[in-house]
Amino acid sequence: IAADAIDEMRMRHAEFIPVSTSNAIARVTVGLVGCGGLGSILAESLVRTGFRNFVLVDDDEIETTNLNRWQGGRLQDVGTKKAYTLAAQMRGFASDVQVTAIATSLDDDAALHALTGVDVLCGGVDNDAARWLLNHVSLQYMIPWFDAGVAITTAPEIDFASRYFSVLPGITGCAMCKGVALIDHHDIIDEYA
Image (cartoon, rainbow, N blue to C red; front, side):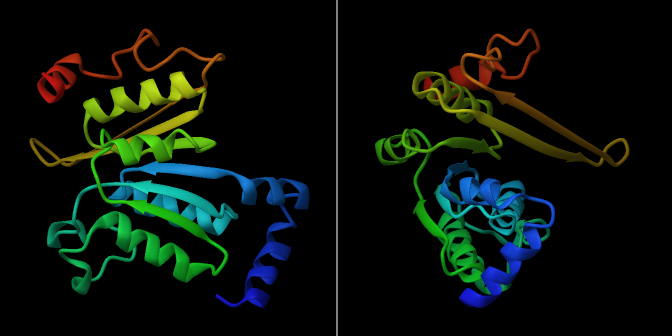
């Protein structure tokens, strides 16, 4: 999108988001872990809202079975790394978007190092071992973490379930101490044992 179109979008946002808030949003660096169905939709929403700085982490490739939920996914994207493809889409939406895409697992040193420098963590992961690790990054580096998940089951009938939680270090409990089973400890042991 050309600079004048970006300015027009910002003027439109000013009708409901004050300019000072929009400017603050544009300076925030978002760490998005999980660039699948939920992560791709969240990334586009964040860019449209005015966020401009991102670190994306996901080691998966787009598969044909992802296309029904992967935002903007096309057949020619099958076989590409989700993080790289999503980064390209985000840059294509607004020329001032800065994205660092890391196509490794979350527990890779490069991914963890990059995430320690973000202002906000967003998780769209599909396993509790990754949530456990994000919980620790959030607490150790005092980074707010927002996590969401979606599940669709078809037996015995179609059901849609979702969950959302946040960890605000120093304000809320962490994911392990909220008094609700947010993380299955067996998944963590299976992953890291």
